[in-house]
Length: 273
Image 1 (spheres, helix red, strand yellow):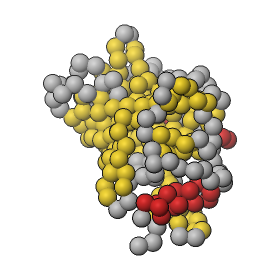
Image 2: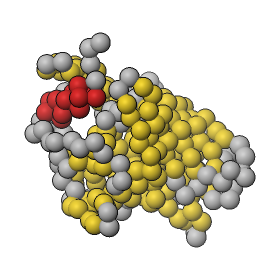
Image 3: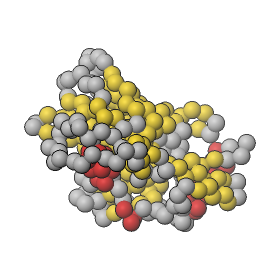
Image 4: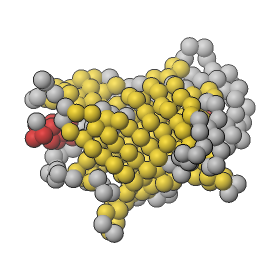
C-alpha cells in the first residue's frame, strides 16, 4: 500500500504537469510553484527552492521579499507562503489507511493552508490552530512591539487557542470569520472578516501566474489515481468591522448574494479500494 501511495503521489504530480521525482522515505511533499526567491533550510544548508524539489520532514521553508512558494504534501494538504515568511515542519506522520498528523510552525509572515487528510495544526508565536477540512490564512508578526497572529477561516472550521497553556479559552472560526491574538492575552471572540482584509490576505498568498495550471472544477483520471480539484467559496463578509491591525479605507457595500471565490485550490488524490 505504501508503494501504491507513493506511485499515486507521483502520478498526481505528473497530472499537474510536473515530471516525476524520486521520493525517499523522509519525503513528505514537493514544491509545485515558486515566485522569485524561496529557500529550503536542510541540515544547516540552504537550497534554492524550485518546482519538483522534494520537501522533507526536517525542512524549514522561507521566502524573500516579493516572493511566494507553494507546496503539495502527501496527505493532500497545500501550503502557500507569502513574502518574508518562514514555516518549519514540526511533525509529519502519514500512513496509508490511517489517520496521520501534521504540525507546522509558522515563525513569521503569511501562510495559506488547504487542509488534507490528517489532523492538522499550525503553531505560531501566539496561537495553536487545529483545523478540520478547511482553508485558512495565517499572518504572524509584530505590531507596536507586540507579537500577534491573525487567522482567517476561508472555508470549514478551525479551533484557535493561545500558545501559552496557562492562558485558557479558545474560539472556533467558521467560513468568513477571523480573529487576532496577541501574546499574553486571551483569545478574543471571532469577528466577520472585512472584505478588504480578505482580499489583502488572499493576494499576499497568491502565486499568480506561477500557479500550476489546474482545471476548475474538474476530475482528471489517469491510471489508478483520480485528482479532484475543488474551488472553495465563502460568502462576501460584512465590511462594517475593522481589523485591529490595519487602518481600513471606506469600502463600498458588497453586492448582495455575490460569492467570493477563494483562490486556494484543494487537491484530493483518491485511490480505488
